Image (tube, rainbow, N blue to C red; front, side, top):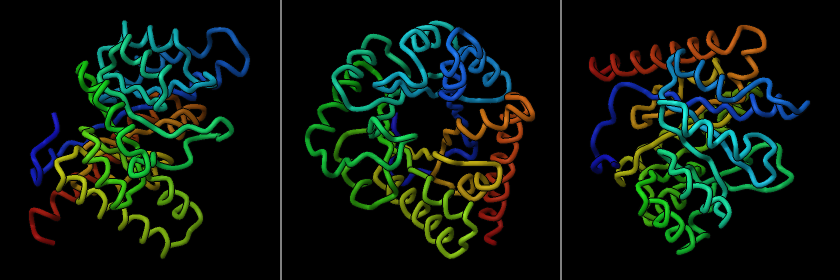
Length: 265
């Protein structure tokens, strides 16, 4: 259930681990190794609060059987990222994951390149959201931190918005302090706006050890979804270690922000 408008989010910041790119490595050669289900189980032990998987039209990452096995096996909430298509709606209604995050999808993109155009989708988005919500699935809309998109998400009836952090991460990686600050302030303003509309606020895309802290400090955000970076780090340190470090950085940043707020600094 979404929180009441204006209510303070809990101090604890949830971590959703996206296991898509474990499947990417598996699919590069075929066969069953490495297994995304095993990655989900490792993530649960390492402190993840949920598992995210994006079932794409071309099945380049997660496959249908992966969704079935995840749904049947893991105890953590499953967040199914999906395009707004009839095929994906049918799959979601069959598996009944805890949540569905609606994302834009273009066949030739390497990764999700921007937020869903909820404002331009009109009644189509609202009808799609309603079909999922009517079966008890919690619906999230992956959007840019744009006032018009956030307002439209509220009208569409979604319980959650996930703010696209890609622009902020790109600017930070490029070392452009001015652009990074602007992108971060846009995320802060978007989180405040969404929270004020009674939407639960999540964020994700491109977050790393170096960039997660500033986003974790945004009090209105209650969940971060992180995947590609963690799978990449797992090559060097192991998935368990990578997730535990990310979890610790998130906790440290959130605790610091809460302490500053309490003291008025």
